[in-house]
Image 1 (tube, rainbow, N blue to C red):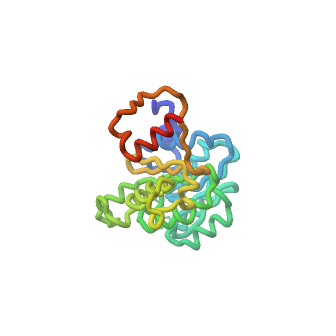
Image 2 (image 1 turned 180 degrees about the vertical axis):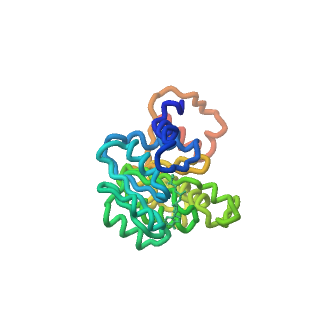
Image 3 (image 1 turned 90 degrees about the vertical axis):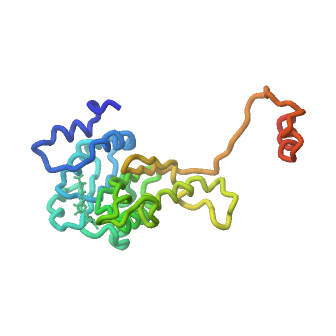
Length: 247
Ligand SMILES: C[S@@+](CC[C@H](N)C(=O)[O-])C[C@H]1O[C@@H](n2cnc3c(N)ncnc32)[C@H](O)[C@@H]1O
């Protein structure tokens, strides 16, 4: 994507006198790819990590009039940034009860940007409490996942159990649970039924929600390269395949 035409990057570049925003530059393309369809549609947006309020103003500008742009931060000073259509919730995003109280107040959210404390318990609790309550076609985008690889301050490390990245790798199996042949340990669950896709980028994962039903497949056409003497035709699977193909 040509970032000179990315409205978020344009906003960021023109913000030299505005409230402070801190973003990795490659995030703008990813945001726009997943969030563009919500612009002008009055979405409910929730950002974890308000800091100086600059990113909330950027989202307000990007999603347009009528959007409800809410924020969450542990720092009570952030409450000063609250506005009529933009609530600021003060609390610890690792606290599940606090998270549930946010959902009770604002209802289903269309877009989540998770840019809070970046500790794994914060990330996982936030995902587990907020994701299932989101709008059916919502997007949950979690960023700065490089902390999953950082031993210092975060306790991360490559393939280290407990990090958000490892947690998300397990969820990528769950996306495929329709094809399980091990029903005792691998089954379709709510995540499987409500998640269309997971997009892994450097430092970001975007979860796209949607109503998913058991996948089906079909064959069309009659022309094949089928050869009755083909070796596999003599195996039990081959015989069944032949019968089906020649019906
Ligand atoms: C990276 S900054 C957010 C930057 C902002 N979104 C931006 O783009 O400019 C992270 C914020 O998360 C907040 N934070 C840290 N730990 C938190 C926690 N446990 N719960 C909620 N917010 C937390 C910090 O106070 C800080 O303001």
